[in-house]
Length: 159
Image (cartoon, rainbow, N blue to C red):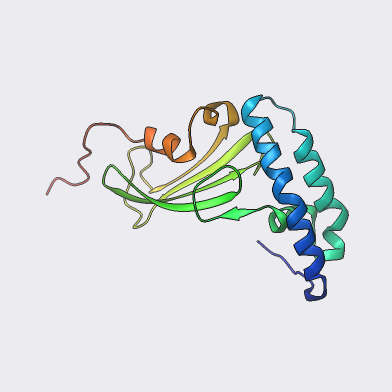
């Protein structure tokens, strides 16, 4: 991400982050409760904040400002942009989840094996998925990822 934040606007950035956090949570709750292809009202407001202040903050575009004000977390959740390391069926993976990264009605989930070991669903050890909110409404991101791995043991090498 190419951001050029002006240091003299840290108070504005902190204020926008404070305003953005509840809007982001409201947007995720609306998207999971009523999945559609329309952006939730809270997301529209969040994007308006980023668009209105991106130049003042020193960002080249609204997307960079949006990235800077959206909340983040070290525990896998849709209520913030998050990243977490998981052990799933013998695989050591890192998963990141970003609601509204791409189409407004999807979450972007990235799965990568820590040592680039092939995974059951990708030979490269990396998978990028755009998942409709409807598929995530009844569980967690970690549950969704765990379901991608088959129940049966996986043989990763012959010897």
